Image 1 (cartoon, helix red, strand yellow):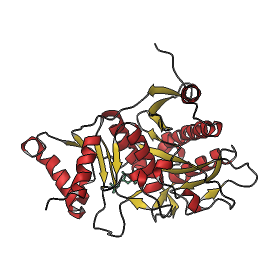
Image 2 (cartoon, rainbow, N blue to C red; image 1 turned 120 degrees about the horizontal axis):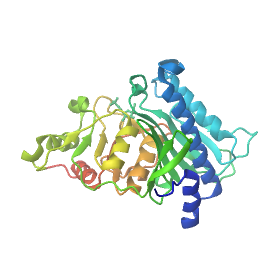
Image 3 (cartoon, rainbow, N blue to C red; image 1 turned 135 degrees about the horizontal axis):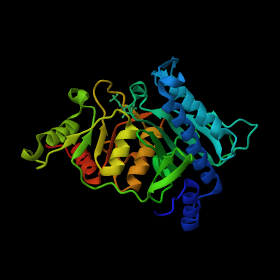
Image 4 (cartoon, rainbow, N blue to C red; image 1 turned 60 degrees about the vertical axis):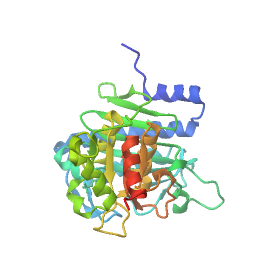
Amino acid sequence: MSSRISLTRYLVEQQREHGHIPAQLRLLIEVVARACKSIAISVNKGALGEVLGSAASENVQGEVQKKLDIISNEVLIEANEWGGHLAAMASEEMDSIHVVPNRYPQGEYLLLFDPLDGSSNIDVNVSIGTIFSVLRKVNNQRGISEEDFLQPGKQQAAAGYCVYGPQTTLVLTMGTGVAMFTLDRETGSWVLTEDQVRIPEDTKEFAINMSNMRHWDAPVKRYIDECLQGKEGPRGKDFNMRWVASMVADVHRILTRGGVFLYPWDKRDPDKPGKLRLMYEANPMAFLVEQAGGLATNGRQRIMDLVPGKLHERVAVVLGSRNEVQRATDYHLNPPA
Ligand code: P6P
């Protein structure tokens, strides 16, 4: 059996090979990975741990918070505050940024996260996950503010997610490919189980919430309709559909076997570009997907080129197998006359 490579050994060997992993970034990844283990323990308790159900509060998105949303957020804040690797954090669950308190040293990085994505699936025991994005602190004389976070996704130093499913798997990129680590519950360590992940350029599987079909724009309707026509239609092949309603689970499937994921703009709320959040959902997933050879656009532009205007802004998302994302994006950019 090939020797098991732990997360720590992977980071040391990446540093030796690429020499590009500053010590603070290595520490950050290790701290986030350890926090995800703590979150996994809480998630896995389920009804036995008094962690299910809703808290009596709403988040900045106006969504009712689940108890595990708050627990996960607190785990990530407490784990990352004292290490000296971060200047500040931002979370889907917090209105404004959380600057590292003065009693701790400030570091070179900014950490953004959706502490528990897919909350509607918690109480029904369907896979959920933690998504994180790492930016470099912009050096300036004034203190850290929200503006320092408003960097395009292509500036990310690292990104990843942890999916709490049949396995607990950490998926990570620092810009030199995508690696997957499975949690060995007997030893409590993350073990490298996949390296240099590649997404197949073609697919027969699409992921979208079909109940919104009547609200979609024409290019999305055209793309999905052609998939539904199957081999008798213009695509000449049959497609399958998946929709977990946990972005982490849908993206993990795509990284593992290919596919295309769409959460497009729809006319229910025309001023809202999409449902998903740019800074801590779309950007980290786009970094991972591109590093694995896929594409990620908002239907018209590369997601990682978008310059954010607000911390919690939303974006339309089309990501996954390169050729399918290109086709769906072309339908937006070059609609039939
Ligand atoms: P819908 C979960 O709430 C989430 O933010 C993503 O993880 C998921 O892809 C999407 O929303 C599901 O949205 O409208 O299908 O419930």
